[in-house]
Length: 265
Image (cartoon, rainbow, N blue to C red; front, side, top):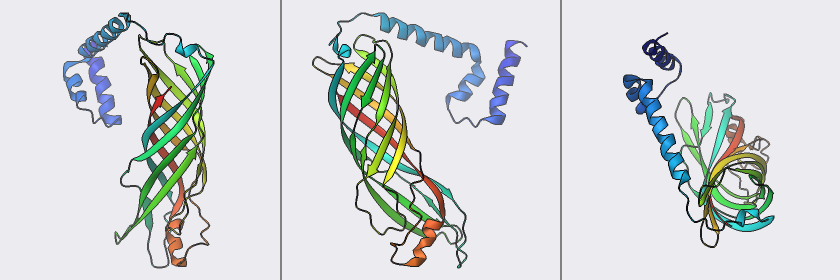
C-alpha cells in the first residue's frame, strides 16, 4: 500500500469510528502524515537541545534527604457521577440527577516524603478540603427541577508513590499514583439527597519539582476517583416521606475530584 492510500484509509477509519473535534484534525488530513512527522521530530530536537543546556543547579542534594516535610495549598472541584434507576413514582414521575456546574473549593495540607531510591518516593499528604457540589434534580416529562447544595469538608489521607523523571537543570517532572481514605466531617442536613461520610479515592496525577534558591515549589494536578457508592439510600431522616423519590431515582453515585495543589518542600 502506498503512502497516499495508507493515509486515506487511516483517516477514513477515524471518520467512521472516532468523533474528532480537534481543529488540527482537518489540517493534518489535508497535508498528510509527512508534515506531522516533521513537526514532531522538530519538537523532539528542540526539547532535547533545551535539556542539554547545562545550568547551575539549585539545591543539588535536596532530593537525597531520607525524609522531609512540607505543606501545600490549592484549589479543587467536586463532581458526582450518577447512575439512575429509571424508577417511576405513583404520580408517573421519573427523576434524574446531575451536577451541571462546578464551584472551586480550597484545600490545605501537610507533606511527609520518604526517599526510596533515586526515582521513587513514598508520600503521605493529609489534606483538609472545603467545597461543595450543586446537584440538580430534574423530572423527565415536566422538566420540573429541584436544586440541592451539598457542602463538604473532607479530611483526606492520601498515600502515594511518586515516580520522578531525570532532573533537567532546575526542573523535574513526575507521575504520582495512590489511594486516599477520606472522611466528610461536615454537618449533615435533611437534604433531598444525602451522601455517606466515608469514601476511598484512587488518585493519579502529574507534577513538576521546581528548584528555587531555598526550597522546592511543586505544582501538581491530580484526578481522584471514588471507589464506593456515596449515596445514602436509607432516609429515615426525611421530614416529608414523599421526598424519598429523589433518592430512589439514583442507583449509585461515585465521587470525583480534580485537585490543583502547590507544595512547598
